[in-house]
Structures are given as structure tokens and as C-alpha cells.
Figure 1 (cartoon, helix red, strand yellow):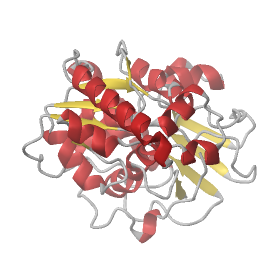
Figure 2 (cartoon, rainbow, N blue to C red; figure 1 turned 180 degrees about the vertical axis):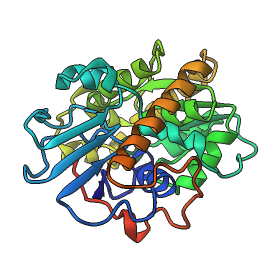
Figure 3 (cartoon, rainbow, N blue to C red; figure 1 turned 180 degrees about the horizontal axis):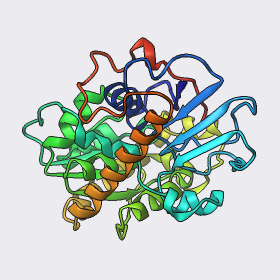
Length: 319
């Protein structure tokens, strides 16, 4: 059974949690490189892109609207559970199949020490970091930038150590919530990344209160206002000398917005609801592993030496 997740270039924090979590939690040898059976874990990877001949096992994935909805009732899918109620409704699955995002299993793993000296941190979506001027905006705002393309261990340390996390990246909120770091949801600038937030937040009975984020340059404004903007035209706008004053003004405004958000009321799920979700996820996976002849889920896992061990090489997907 092959671990399947979105392996982007650059890497993205939420997706890169897969090798970390599953290497620690699953029995040795449970995953391999055979593509006739696919293990779909963390991420919005329930898509219509997989071969009909492959058996697809959904272990907490979600539908994010990045492709047409697959027919999970065509006989080639085994849906153990999904990320949230929104995914279950769209795919025509029973409500009890909506448990939570498997990233909550981080609560069962040994984690890096909390970083020190971080008060307010901001994690943009990795695409926003590529398009925008968020490094500069964070410096201007006095906010620590958490780069979702960075090493997973470093990011976990930063989230653990932050007093507050403002995050445009959904898995920034999922992990902060699991590690009990107060968080503030920043509405993704690109519309395509918004739907999945409700899916996860409903699974933990969170009354999600997303706050508007402001673009940090003209290129981001293009993609926020016109999601299907011509990429080359939008990209040019961030480097043209004649537009430099406008870009500088937008970066300053984005920094002021981050300062405003740092005073907003943070959110977190209830302890009891989170504990129930962790138990539900762990129990469902344990039953699945045992049903396939495994020794069951590890109660606690040791962190793998490498997040990309040979046994968990990924199948590349496209968003």
C-alpha cells in the first residue's frame, strides 16, 4: 500500500505531515511502493485523478474542490473516514464517516521543543508566500513569519512556542489547535483554498470566524480579485519599477492588517471535543491496520529520523 499525498515543489507543511505522522504511527512495513493500493491520508486529496484499477483507501482525507468530485461509490474506494462533515455530505457518505483531520495524531507523538521568543506568528499559504511580500510585511508588523515550506520539525517547534498564530494555511490552524496554541483564521486570499476550512472546523464543532487578509503586493491582488488571472501578467506586476511605490504601499497596508489581527480574539476547539476526535481517528486507523493483518496502531510513535524514509515515498499529485 503506497502513501499518497501532494508532494509539491516547494514542499508544503500540511502535506509534509504525512511521512512524519504515518512513519511514527503505522507498523513497520505497513506501507510500501506498490501502487495497486493507495493510502490517502492528510490533505485535500480526494480527487478524480487516480487510476480506476487502484484500490483507494481514504484515511482522513478531505475534498477541497481542486478537481471534480470522484465517485467514491464505484467499487474502487474504501472510505475509512474523512476530514469533516462537508466532505461527507458532498461525497454522499454517512455522517459518522466524518471524524477529523489525521494531523490531530500529533498529540500522540514526541514533538520538538517549543521555540522561544515568539509572541505573534503568521503562517501564510505557501502560494501566498511565493506571490507576496510577506517576509517584509511581517518584519514591518513585528510578527514572526512561519514559512510553510520550511522543515516540518522547525515549524512544529515554532507553532508550539508561539503565544498566538495567525494563519492563512489551514494546517497551521489544525496543528495549532492540536498543540493548544491559540490561533486566528485568516481567510485565504485565493478563493480556491477557502472551502476546506469549514470542513475541518465543523469536525471539531468550531464556530469558525475567519478574518480578511489584505494582499501584500499587486500580484496577490490580481489573484485575490481575479482568481483566474493570467499568471505572467500578475507575476510581472511585482517586479515592474513603475509599480514599486504601489507595491510598497500594499505591503505596508498588509503589515498594518497583521497588527490588527494580532489583537483579534483567538479560537481553539474544546479540549473534550479534540480528545474525542483524537480517540476516534486513532481507533478507526487501529481497526483498519488490524484488519489487514497488522499489529495495530502504535500508541505513541518515535519521530522518524527522516520525514522521507524509503518506506513512505509519496505519489506525486497536482493541486
